[in-house]
Length: 155
Length: 155
Length: 155
Image 1 (cartoon, rainbow over the protein chains, first blue to last red):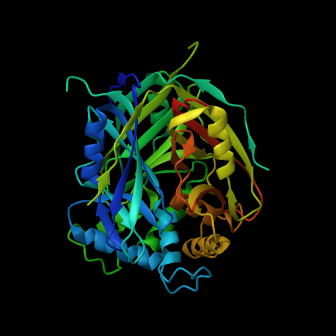
Image 2: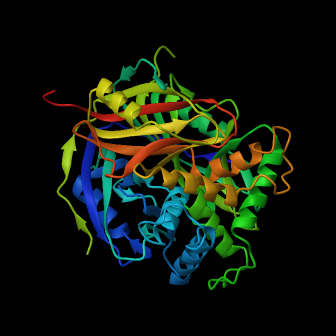
Image 3: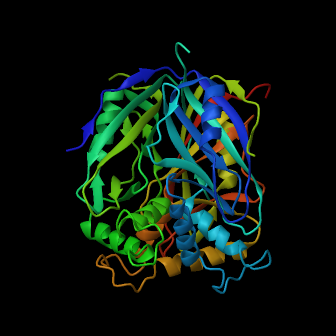
């Protein structure tokens, strides 16, 4: 049986906007969990959600295990099997890593949200938030942030 | 030609927070549509959105066909082809089903929203909301819920 | 180093609801970026987010490159490799393109959001918003829209 907790009700008070600039190091995952925590602290967030959006078509946002770095290595391996460089792509003018990067971005996605409760991100114990860079070279990636919700009380 | 309907405007009045605990039975899909309907009823939701977030790295949230159960069987088959257990994963200390579960979670995702109109979930006729368990064993999975929107009128 | 911008704070003032009806031409991508821009203009949106939800299990929402149409051709090729028609699906009563369409929908997803700042969609330069039709035949697809945020100032 599924069980629903009691509910907590507050009033919407804040829309907070910011942008996070992330420097990637080429293909792989860059953790941004501390940056999102900084954002909701500065925003004075209480109960609500933080929404993240990456403004690119060859990099994604993903929530994944933050403990064993081997997991991220295997995730890259999986992505390269699902979207290999040598697959006869028509669109190849931007290099062999470009079209696979678009496919990976389509599969993983560019938008997600994380709930916030009493000013704390409600991530699971093993969850970290990452920018997944799918191009071979380092890039600057912009992640647009919105907090929607109530203010933090008694802070 | 695409056609945009007339718009309906209301004021944001409610941020409602809750958590749904879901007991899975090992690999497969557990429907939570009735639980989400219960939540928006208890929340007194009118026009807005309900946002769902699963606090795990080896289980996902997915909206899929709720009619023929063969669809869910085929979806599991597809996922096991895309992320097979025997694929030379480096991260294997938690069992052969663990790394495939992370890959599936990355592909499907852990956050989504459903619009609510006059207190009703705006799901399509054939859409159901599911927790997708990617581990072989049963687990308790926590789904964090937020309703953001106006109150239900005349209820 | 990641860098967080200064924040901009406004009050939640609007929940705006509408539905966009999209006529697809069979398998492929239909751009809806202009329709979303129309919606946020009519809604009088300022700072906030627009949330999109497609009410179907064989069509998805995706944000992808809007420049070279070859990219969309390659994305279709990639999806057909990941979810081929001839793959021994159990669920085949609705035609050979139906079960692959469900798999593609699971991978890409049916819900996303785009941030809005001072009445402008914060899409990246090369990002367009698309309905991805996964069935072979044309369909009418309903996309449910919500704007949550503040009003546009000085308009």
